Amino acid sequence: MTTEPTKPTKLPPLSPTPPTDDNAPAKRFVLDSNDPAQVGDGHWLRQGKTGPITTKWGSKLLKLPKKDSKMAEQKEEQAPVPLGTITPDSTAAGSDWLRRRVRKPAPTPPQAEPPPRVGRATPTRNSISSGQGMNGIAQLLDALTFAAEKHRMQRRKDVDASPYINHPIAVASVLCSEGGITEMDVLCAALLHDTIEDTNTTEEELRARFGDTVAKIVAEVTDDKTLDKHRRKALQIEHAHALSRAAKLVKLADKICNLRDVTSAPPAHWSLQRRHEYFDWARQVVEGLRGIHSKLEAIFYSVYSDRPQR
Image 1 (cartoon, rainbow, N blue to C red):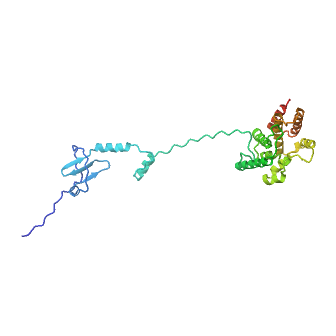
Image 2: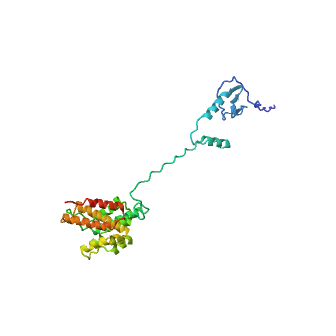
Image 3: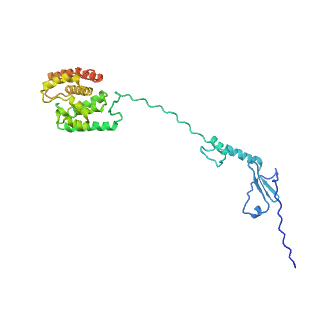
């Protein structure tokens, strides 16, 4: 008995275009690619960019209406895009879309510059507020330390026997705070102005530690202790006009401080007449310093006018 070969089942041909049925129910159909009954039995699936999604299952047609897909696309286009979001579209159209959607940050408005600070004096070379800021402060503190060490055993002649270092500090303070002087050499010389005259310090020692300029200023305002007191005072009057500018500033501030001390805390044994004599002598010295600093000169004559009356 001869067995005839089994003929393969002939599958129906694929439709070239999906049938349309406007009355089909609007249901979503998911094609299962793992189901051979769906994949291998002549079923088809097509999704257009703007058209509906349709699929055929036997003689049954499932379709998404056109209007729903269009509404979905419009909704997608109108959806807000967060700032800086990058879409997967890398085409030229996508790049144009990205440029339109990404917002550029708003430019920062220019900030107004703060108004310049109004000071008493314009900083000059070697000043605290110039480019040598920290070096200048270190030099000033070094001069203060040196003067305090040299005057550590000395006292003023007032009743309270105040530490002598108070006087050099006061001279430097008058120059800086009241006269607006910020030149480092002048301020250092003010702190050191009595070291050669009243201690065992030499001009060479100051030159080695603080430089030639500071040493010269201190030497100019130093009295020669080998001469008697009256001669020394007379030479101060004679030499005042010939001093350098820096030495004149130190001398003027020194006389301001001395007059203030004689007024408020005079030496314990000084009489009123001797205090008046000192005021008159200091005025003669300052006459030789005229024109060096108008503000400090005005301060001196203001203190002079308040000379003690008893």
